Amino acid sequence: MADKKAIRDAYGEVLAKLGEENDNIIALEADVGSSSKSILFGKKYPDRYFNVGIAEANMAAMAAGFAAAGKIPFVNTFAAFMVLRAGDPVRSLIAYTNLNVKLAGTYAGLSDSYDGASHHAIADIAFMRALPNMTVISVADAVETELATRAAAAFEGPVYLRLSRAEVPIIFNKENYHFEIGKGVLLTQGDDVTIAATGYMVQKAVEAAERLKANGVRARVVNMHTIKPIDRELLIRCARETGAVVTVEEHNIYGGLGSAAAEVLSKEYPVPMEVVGIEDTFTESGDYEQLLKKYGLSVENIMHSVKKIMKRKRS
Amino acid sequence: MSIKMERKQYLEDLCKHFRIALIELLHQIQTGHPGGSLSATEMITTLYFEKMNIDPENAKWEERDRFVLGKGHAAPMLYLALAEKGFFPKEDMATLRQLNSHLQGHPCAKKTCGVELSTGPLGLGLPAALGMALAAKLDQKDYFTYVLIGDGESQEGIIWEAAMSAAKFKVDNMIAILDDNGVQLDGTTDEIMPMGDIAAKWKSFGWHVMTINGHNIEEISDAIDGAKTVKGVPTIIIAKTVKGKGISFMEGKNTWHGKPIGDAECTQALAELGGALNG
Image (tube, rainbow over all chains, first blue to last red; front, side, top):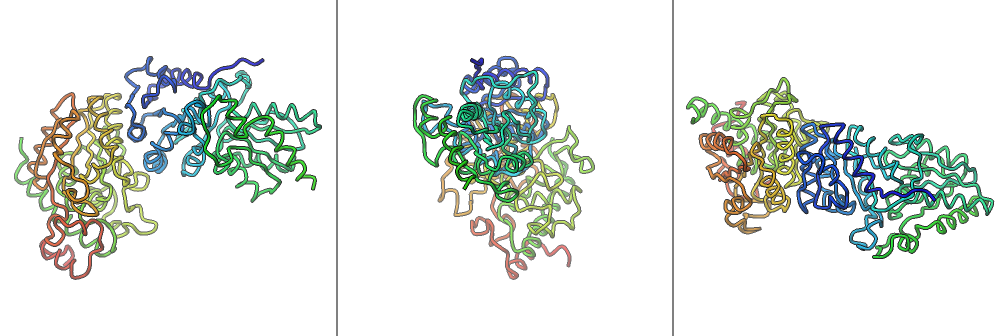
């Protein structure tokens, strides 16, 4: 059994390290620092840590000012509120002016499971992806969290980092995992179908591919950690080489990874596609894994979608 | 430390010049917001031509003072000041709001040299200015950040979020100016959303509050000098102004928030201001 580590812990630790490496990095928080783990930065660098209270829009607008004056601000709140509360300054100040602000949306998807649909973020990718200049990254485990956060800090321009509350098995080896913004990662070889997954669903896609072997299906798994800019070349190559693509994401089926992949493939290399995600419905409170299962984000449902697409591919 | 008489006269003449240029321009392009530009004329002019430490030849100079136009619809007056200052050619003014122009309907920092921050959606300028001021403190730089907000704009909740934050973080290197013209798009502020005792509101949020006549150059100048000496708390200058100031039929009228100027109206307005610039 692989070691587990919470994505939020990995984020908080690397943010604190980045603070040590670069004086220009500052962090803003809207009273969820103990949850987002930005508090790890705040304890080490209190002078560069601005907890603005429960005022997410104000926080994002302040970050824009910091960035306009040369700082690299990390903005911290729940993903749901990064979009719904801070959405105006995120669009009108940060994206519009292409400011160097990093938006760390934690508790994304259903990961804040017991708090219910009000706190689940299932439209954040759609919103962020539709903003010109915005880069959108969704991380799969603690190793990728560290590398993605470092890459975001080094990148010039606004980045939305989609983070999770969840404790996740470590699937990547820090010593040899190469993370590059905009480049998907091939995880499992296969020629029958491609499973393109992002975030927490990557590990489930890997497991589905493993179990599909028993059915004689050789599924290729790719980790699409960057949803914008999407790795067009990789998607087209996978479509050409496997003839079918299943996307998997912890997000509404509208506007997320599935949409991004379909936008590329429908134009460049149309193949049968299935989009696994939340079926345009509000979710509810409950145990995280049970919730994921109920809303179609299970290994079984990925396998089911693969079997469906294999039939379409043959017909 | 009052402003010298000749400087005061120079700035007043400049304001008159800007008002005439504004009317001619908005009449010519038949779009844009006259009312809120006219109430802010003296404040923008005093900042750019008397107070702010800026260099058009080196627009991104790190030590420069910053100005953020919270009430972004007063963009035409800001652009007139920037052009006069030399950030871009005055001929560009005719392209305001037109296709391929760098002069957008609301200020865009990506397009216009001298614009520090993109504004327009109301309320975002004050918190962003606060971020700039805090960055200056971290960098131990002496520049001031000025932000001009509207009274209608102050109905946005984020203004009060930023007001709390500025007090908490003891921001004394940012000076907010409230263009208190009493009128918004749909009517007077009293009709649409009464602001009550605005000075008391800001005081209760922990700010140092000064109240002046926002069309009096001397009072603006003194207030800014005074605000710079206040330590440990943020300062707001509540500037009592008249929307549409200087043009009798526009003064205090919400209908002139963003209405195109007709030919006869343009003629009358220019006559009241003392004549057209080019003839």
